[in-house]
Length: 591
Image (tube, rainbow, N blue to C red; front, side):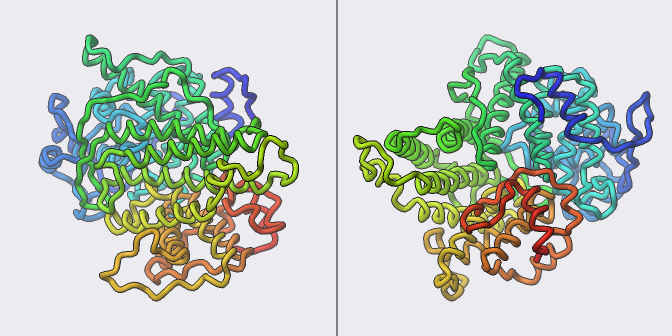
């Protein structure tokens, strides 16, 4: 463990020396690791097709696609066919990465990152990042080798490009070469504070967590939070500054918020208190009301526009709400007074409901939402499931006869907030399942990873627990006719579990963290004597060989909780995915 009072340099070194052992690779290029040769196509002949920096780029726009279509490919597209077109820009792999010389491969990874990971998390400002990357200057303010390698490592996690694999066909090795190169470059930075380093740390925190190494991800986040305090924060509302200064201010304020959003979201998922939000971010930023295009490439042909800055503003407000409820539920200094606790919980619940009710019309829930907006709703459902479940658990653990005389146990605040908490948790779980069905039908199961994994995981545990607690109500009603649309309130918990579990399995074909969750769910179902959904043969075949093997445990370094923990006596003495799976592996084989 790194001491909380350690210097930034000590924490930076701990990332490499205490948490990760880099793979030994032969040295080359003045001590840097050797290049990984590309195997699918050679983009070196496409430099003449690169977009002119003077032409403004809209990610996935028709104009960009037409310009990219003028490039003449000398080899196959990444997926081996022309089902998906080439990226809307061609970027040079050099000088940004020593892993590959393949310009098209790197361009595809950047496109996939900007389409699937960046729209909601907003790690970086796409226009500024692409502008900096096109310059080819390592000293750019908006791009760096560390950031590019981090971006490529994260993008590799859900693609099937041959170059993404370190070991052919071994899914956990996708992007490991970029990941290790990023760690190598971060060590060379010696903890230097900069916006691009902050962005890279934010990307690596999520990327490491997806790999089943959220302990490493938390270490990156610790460094990022410290660095965030050290960097100045400019006023983005200042109209007298130059375009370059405005770009700097926008990039800085957005990553500042993203760091805290990431911290509160991860803390909420790990059931712990988040760090205090930087007081300089007391006011939620209002950026220009601009529409951004979103493309589903390479997994979907969907092309849609959304108000990215309105989404960012709503996400910032949710960040504050999540920070407050984490403090309320998980602080070691929880309010001993039951009445005060219930009053605070009721007030928070009202604010959260008001925030959700007052979302702008284009951000309110519908089955045809732009993909990034689904994540806003998924995040809200997760926060509410955690709120209902843990508040109920806390209330049930309170000693019944020991409340002071002036605090009536059945005060109005107590009755109002505690009645139906578990029913509300199941309602939010069903809302999450309903959302996942809509998302999957519109954007495909392949695209569920960044947007629905946490909601599908948390909902699956909640619904599994309900089925255990209601053994006489496990059988769902007859399957509705195709023209009948089930709403969240109409869904039987078993039907909802089918949808939630399907999306967990979809994510399990992509990343190690989801595979660990599948193992947890299966083992939990065995302990509870509850049968998990028997999904259709196509889904079962797609995940049968990749969801979990005992050898996968070596990839797991995770404190991810079993959200059903404690609902069954002597369920497990271990806490966190890694320890639970190790304990269960000795006594109960994976089903």
